[in-house]
View 1 (tube, rainbow, N blue to C red):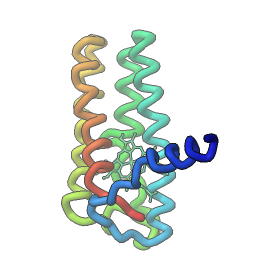
View 2 (cartoon, rainbow, N blue to C red):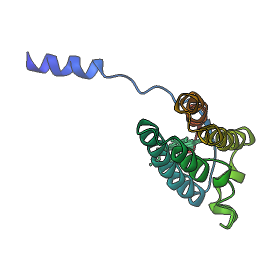
View 3 (cartoon, rainbow, N blue to C red):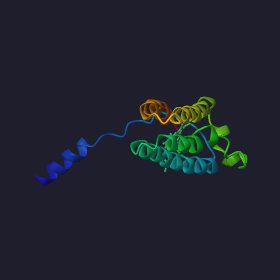
View 4 (cartoon, protein in one colour):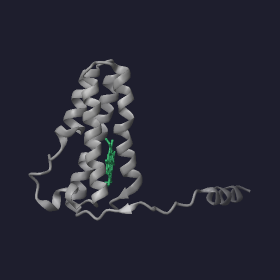
Length: 140
Ligand code: HEC
């Protein structure tokens, strides 16, 4: 009886769906840069949401500009080419990365007003670029 339950449980496991995202071939060094940047991105998003919840709207905008916005662009320029993810990305992927920076700066500009409702309404555009890139591209 128990064995049947085990077999049923195994049959019920979802089959891993095929990953149809476009493969972006980055050097291992660039992947490492990207991964660290991504962990920082997640931290930044969390800070922004935490600050919005605490009604620290302007501060949320400052974090967005510095960590995700135009202010965060080009920060890998000093690295050797093989460690820079941006220029190794397919053009459309790189374009998504750039529009993510712009969306974060748009959010930051709106947050300067201190108006939380307006700032909140500009946040989905920022998250949208995270989602769009993750849904379309893989590096492994
Ligand atoms: C231009 C494409 C792109 C954009 C935009 C993007 N990501 Fe990523 N992200 C990636 C790729 C590619 C990986 C996988 C990196 C790898 O493991 O090689 C990744 C991985 C991650 C990871 C996992 C890191 C780990 O430990 O493996 C997190 C977390 C993450 N992204 C958060 C974010 C957040 C938050 C945003 C938006 C603010 C964002 N990303 C925007 C491409 C992107």
